[in-house]
Image (cartoon, rainbow, N blue to C red; front, side, top):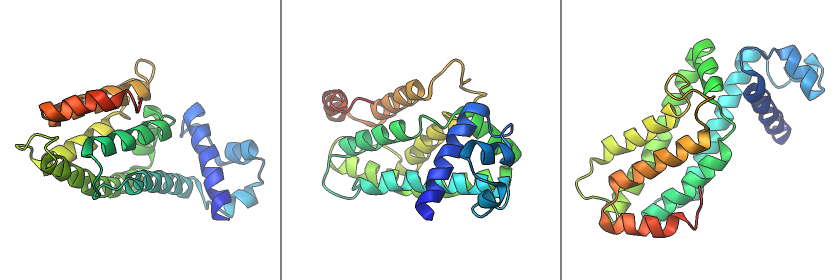
Length: 205
């Protein structure tokens, strides 16, 4: 049942991506999925509950990506960030700025809670990576770990803000690649940048 729910949510995310969150009604979703309203209501009591579950799933997928790669293992810190960023880029291309804007505007309580929980989760992993990179001699040793980790998260969030990056002018992939490149170059020392230049072509974002 949970697998079926996840499949439904993925299809709904695509529907929101194509048509916008606000403009898609529960009847539209029922019709597009080929389910009766009663069947749909077995999974989602209303649209607000649907949005909450969709954001829960998105956050879980974020956490899975960060948990899969061993942030506290012996792998080079830059290599780990490259692998994670590649997965984030692949997975979240279909989360448009307009979707984020609609959720933030029309479901602020749900969206703000989602953001707080995602920040807390990712912040821990990025701090581990920064501390590791400093110890490995890949990152600058004068970094403020807490500040830089929060800047990374803030940049991720800003990518989905249509007021900053209008969807008709910037693709998510382009934004993410530029953001990540600038981030690495800002925290890495000469040795780290040399390693990054060598590795980034192997893991094309």
